[in-house]
Length: 120
Image (cartoon, rainbow, N blue to C red):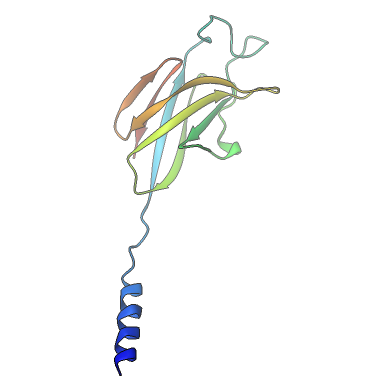
């Protein structure tokens, strides 16, 4: 009888496990017109092909903002309101770092190379 009660208590506690809550946010990004050294982002003088890394994970390749100084992308995460961003210009040989830093929901964050804002 005692074992049945313990087993029942374990099963009940498993049923009360915390539910995952996913939130979708939008990142709006505006890259500087040139690199810090004054050179253009691409060899042909074009705008960067922006890649965004959030907390160490690149957003899906199809969400790349090609040939643009500004763009918006959505991302979905679990229960967070602040992230570490790395923003790159995608190139054939190596990606150029545009900017990096931490930003929170509802803020406009200015980094060397770009500014971003995050909204829900």
